Image 1 (tube, rainbow, N blue to C red):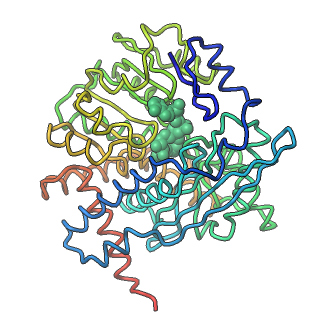
Image 2: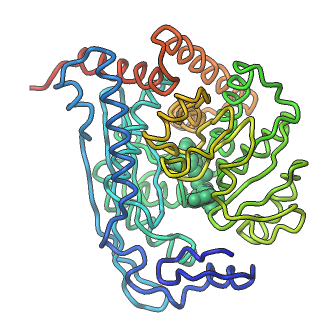
Image 3: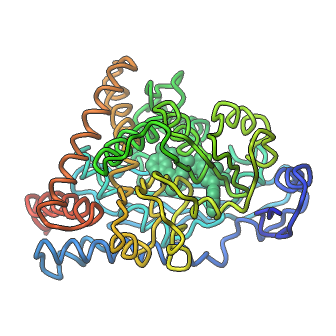
Length: 456
Ligand code: NAD
């Protein structure tokens, strides 16, 4: 049994056709979908976790309370109303945000999310994690994030274009190649980035390639950007397995989320010889203890938009059941807060590599650490995307393009160097990889603050 996820139509359905008609139908959508009211609570939990991680790091680093407060508070927050003209002529009002958490090390950098879960607190948490991620992998950016509260599957392409262009127009005063550079995230893609870049460029009167990353290659995107996050996930996953003396060949693995990150992570892990026994999206999980044919799964999703009804799976289940499988490697690559106090007891994977941002809550993280399960934190594991976004920005600014091989080798070098620094720090401080990574990143940002001094 599956649930249609649109907010007006929360009812179980047993057939793929019915589910698809729920997902694609837009005639039952009204102004409450993606409206400016009632922000979801999940973002508040993510912000609580992000600030608790920061507190732990500043305590370990011996920083005064003033430094903690400075780093816990976003530098700039913009909340915008987005009036949308629907295809049927009605007007709907959406809420959008852009938060710049820290700009001490360079312009803001971070994705734009289109999701019904978007709230100011969620964007604040994600922006803070971006600050640490950029510092950890030594790219010259601060942290930022943005989002529009809406379910993109409920809008036509023309409506999505209007949402994107109006949102871009509203946040124009604070973005730009030297100010803040958006990228794709949940519910957005290279087409969204192309519209953002075009809107910004038209308003500037000239083409500005460096205003966003994750663009189509034909429009100044970088070779290798589309799979960069997943490639980074796989590079550190292989290191993590090695550190636990787990042979990757035929090792059972599962990937939660079959979007931009999860899909390529499953494909690349399978290419490294791991046995992908399950993958999930928000509707279902598909299982095969002998290993799924990921290419066939990808073809099914490209055709239908969902994993539901993938005929070559041994069975389907509720998506959350994937977390409780007997695994060597689990890659949560969907949304935040999926491994929590209520389900962590059943999460037995030996290695967890966070493809998503914030998939493990504070309470669950403590349980996993106490049980000796290795968690590779998001700010390290999924940093491949921002690394190649940085390469895209550098190439765009210079109007000089690198080969895919150059991108791959530079990405690999940065990911493995970050892995080495984090594991060394963890060993010397006797802390988890998450605490070690946060300490390294927070120290780098705090040093930038100290060198610049406080104005005035
Ligand atoms: P996406 O929108 O392309 O895909 C999200 C996937 O998660 C979809 O398959 C969706 O069905 C699934 N999903 C949602 N809720 C789920 C649930 N409860 N259980 C199982 N599946 C669920 O998004 P994406 O770009 O792949 O991003 C996924 C995560 O990775 C997010 O946390 C994002 O912030 C993070 N991330 C993305 C990038 C990037 O380059 N796209 C970079 C770094 C981090």
